[in-house]
Image (cartoon, rainbow, N blue to C red; front, side, top):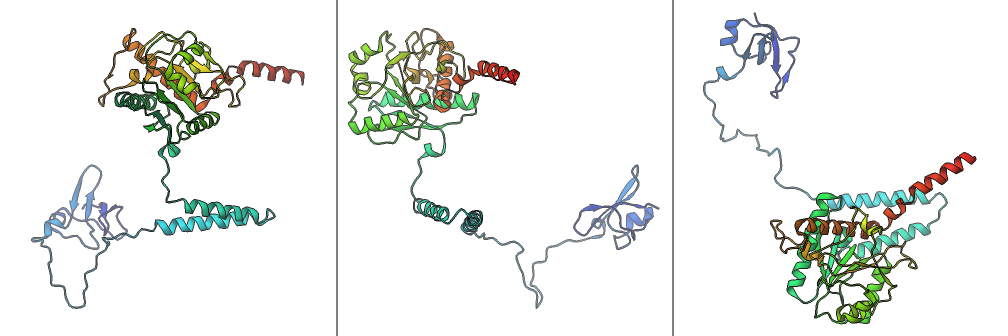
Length: 372
């Protein structure tokens, strides 16, 4: 006799044998039919088991195709259509939020806050249909459209490739860059804007200058790149001599531009860099002096001639599009590192500069604790 080991319930799930399951003999196991006292399953023990199932006793299995008997209706267990409840659920969530606000404010804070909340919700609802710029919801760099198709293509490919490098090496995952018409498009949604200089650089209108200065004052960063690799020893002289820079920088209300030294935050916001090459190397990079500015000592303007976008740019397969001289691929890697530092500086400001004072702060705290 083989006792029941594991059996199947009415849904075909394996389970322990019920109390009323009884052992079966070997001959009955081979020829028998499962029943209440002998449910289908395994009979025997861990080292020797046999299966009792219904399959061996069924001679012919056919699908019943009807007609159905009188009084029997065919009903689909699962419907084929879905009901969109998102609008009702959002309305319920909004109602619960309002109830929570009222409950929190009714204890003495007054109804003014409730009215303000309702007004804000009304404005948000009125503007719900307006498109929201991508840069407002994600990290998106921008580049100024110059009117030169090749230069604009290089800017787009360069910033796209820099975005891939940032996504691979940091927690920053930018979306594709946005072309910017400096006379019409907003700047505020972009952490930094790349502005290549061309011979066709047009003068900037007063309205555009006002928007650029507002962008800089709010913490934005613009990178001006003359792309020609020319050594610039005195940027003030270059601003007067270079008609491209003169048309833009001459219109802005900027403090003096100073050379970027090796100890500047831009050289250690992520990588430790002593130089900032692009397609060309050996050129001085200039940055806005921020000693008298109000943006937490973070510069808003970087000027160079290295051709950074060309050094970053790749084709869809990741192959570089332009050679870099004189340092080859090592120089390209340094150009990518400068781009990473630039993005981090634009988004995090001078927090690395603050860290430089950590040792002094800890020493003062230690002396204060000793005096107590």
